[in-house]
Image (tube, rainbow, N blue to C red; front, side):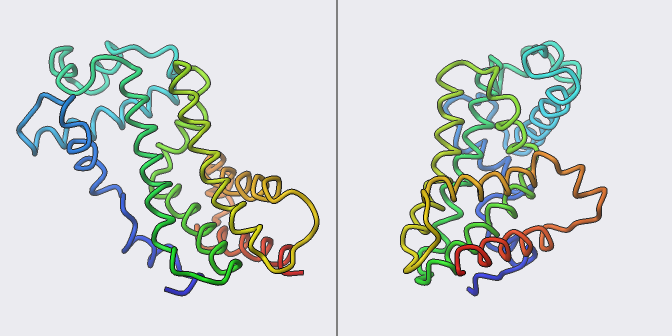
Amino acid sequence: MQPDFTFAQFKTMTPLDAGNIWAYLLDHYADRITVKRRKPALENLERIFNATFKLANDVGFRAMNLRDLCQETGLSMGGLYGYISTKDQLAEMIGGVVRHATREVPLLFDTIADPLDRLEALIRSSIYISEILQPWFYFVYMDSRVLAPELRHAAKNSELYVQSLFADVIVRLPSRPPGSADLLASHLMATFQDWYVKRWKYRAADVTPDQFAGSAVRMMRGYLAA
């Protein structure tokens, strides 16, 4: 695949999307989820997590409780316990989805040899996967500060992992501007985070994922290839 793939092309190869994410959760957390009928389980997982994102945005994850989640989803407390029993479990599962996506997507580009091409593929895929899973990325970025220490630590490590992927490619450039590769990678991370954290800004300006990714890549190439 060429490194300048589009959002439409990426959607045909992404390991997680809006359609299969509920199956991933059901299978990955099968030891925790006691509901065994697959169709209602998938439907209820979608209701639970969509309600979680709504409540987290409306009142904050710290303030919401499981009774709020029952009211929002229409599930009884017993029905909810078939999937999760604590808010920490919810946050753990959301973080797990983001970690899975950010670790699986880069594997798609292992065969790209040219460092700048590989960096372009990583930037584009990071922007595109965060567009597909925007509520999940947004939650991890905005609400991890109120989570238990081990969950906060996992969220930080997830971000540092993606940054390290960028840095590892930058140090392989035959010639690059002086300065820390980690710091340059951090600037790239901030660009991609701005996309999913401030999605409202780009939606209001009618900026598409392809336009944003193209601009980010041109900025990266213009600086690192100079």
